Length: 477
DNA sequence: AAATGTGTCAACCGCGCGCTC
DNA sequence: CGAGCGCGCGGTTGACACATT
Image 1 (tube, rainbow, N blue to C red):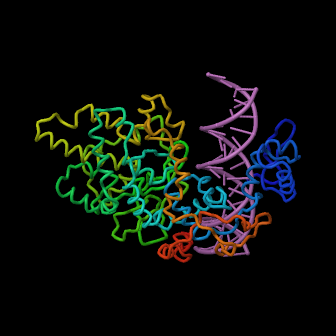
Image 2 (tube, rainbow, N blue to C red):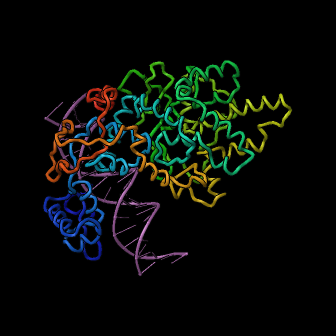
Image 3 (tube, rainbow, N blue to C red):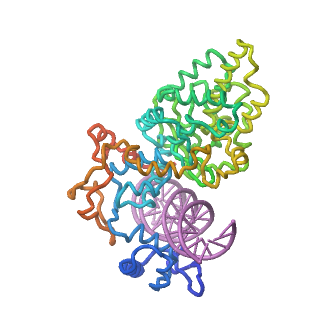
């Protein structure tokens, strides 16, 4: 951070704009200005008020610290639940989350999430609580196809995308059927199918060891690992398709029972009988950018089609290093399974081989859904990356559209009974307002989307049981 | 007590979008 | 149609406090 003295301040004209922490005097000036002129036109603030701050800085200061009704202090359990729920559905849309949390700022929520995410990952816990995962699967399973995968996707949207369709499906009819197979798989599998993935895969393993489903990244001899699946590497971030997944660089397997770990490889290891994952991704290393201009590295996966992984822990290093671990893996696997089935069917029916060379090549180079956006972009002339969206088809043009719908239906998404009025006497947890500028919401602000949870919900989300709050502090190694 | 690690908070930066001209 | 501008969003960084070794 730039020191208060204005070091590094940028000049506009003759004015050297100040950076760094705001002083009380500056706050006062800004407050007075906004009182007189109202919000907006931030660049005029500097001109008219004498503040040596750029408009951006003024807006930020106002929004995050000076505007009325800001709530300070720790998040309440309800707020935490809301954040987690929202994040599971809309990803890193901090502003949208903030809109649902009166008095909270996007910056606050973002900081909260990143901190807790880090803590949780260090402790080897899944980003989302298990019950939420299951709820999401159930929810998505009932959702109509609605593909829209944002780089900041929640796993819910990923599931949607997987279950719906893909550009390949839209544009390549000869792939329709095989893609539909994976689509059907994703559509028809229940949440428990996924959660029971190990047994399913083991069955597969028992009947056909050559099934590519067993390729690296998903399975080893211990069962199924979804650690590399975005379904469990939730929280995809980044404008340039940076997925919040750890591609893994070491082969050290963590001790799932130990909160103190030294490796940084795993994510959510569903295969463990405990049902609790290990996720030790370091925040600093979890954002692996996938080059939108070249998906070869992403898809380069001969093994995907080639054969089964020998599995075992020793395989883990290869797994981690060799696959993207993204949803594509899942789709690849499911598609491959179905293709094997198709192949068998066709062998029986005398049809042409479902794994024709060109289909295979297309599969490799384009694949489905998430993998195909460069090709899709070329075909459609629509820059997916421009919109930070992948896997969209034309009819479902844009995350924004979805988000707008989400805005309207956010509450429904959250499965909250209804917006609940929080009475004036409501105590927002133990949070104390320590801000010089902020104040609790006034009594005339009576509606908030913070819900009064049901008793059942309280069980999971009370202070002590909050998924974050009882997280042990990370011990130094 | 010093060094190191971690958490929290605040602020900056880059990018993209929408509007206006 | 494109440039310029204002603005908002999301990612990142730095400072500081606190905890741990």
